[in-house]
Image 1 (cartoon, rainbow, N blue to C red):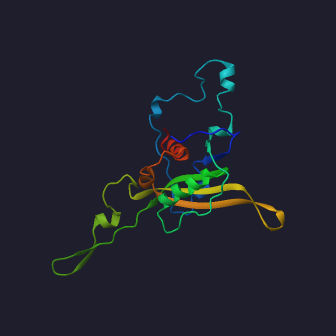
Image 2: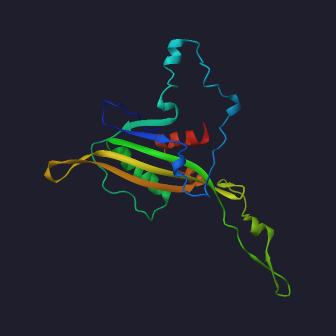
Image 3: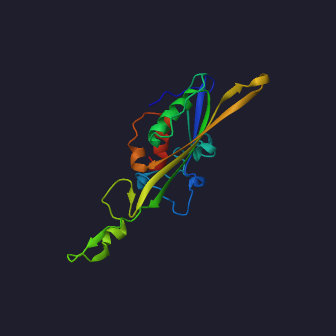
Length: 213
């Protein structure tokens, strides 16, 4: 797990907004939330585990952190100069860009949503022995193409992440300073996302939110 930093030292804060309905982009995309793991054995968050007013007031359930995940990690004063090329896979770009972003003193917001999109039906013509076209098979019309962890019925399970990174101000001509805000968008199947290998704290936080760990 990544090292956690103090806000009094040089650091980078990552805030995760999930589910971010703003990232649903078309009528073909439907919000798809996963079932929480071990949901039947969890404690009711509205009932204090310790019946003490002082403990309840410090539980953190009345703050914004209840609906967002934060991570504060060590950073340096240097500013990223080269973000990942657009021709790389989104999972590669995400790791590369976030490694650069969190290494700089500043903050990043990640807007995350999981959704499903219909799979294109495979239109495969069935040839009659006499060479007469009989149309596509039932399996092709349904769009069946086997089992997979990134499929929901006849849909593909997807995740989209929009990144807003704010880095320290840079001095411009005339002695003026301007804040750097860098954006990035990443989309992949949930199976690809779950297979990403990294111990980054922000990545573990997203997985906790998505899978309800």
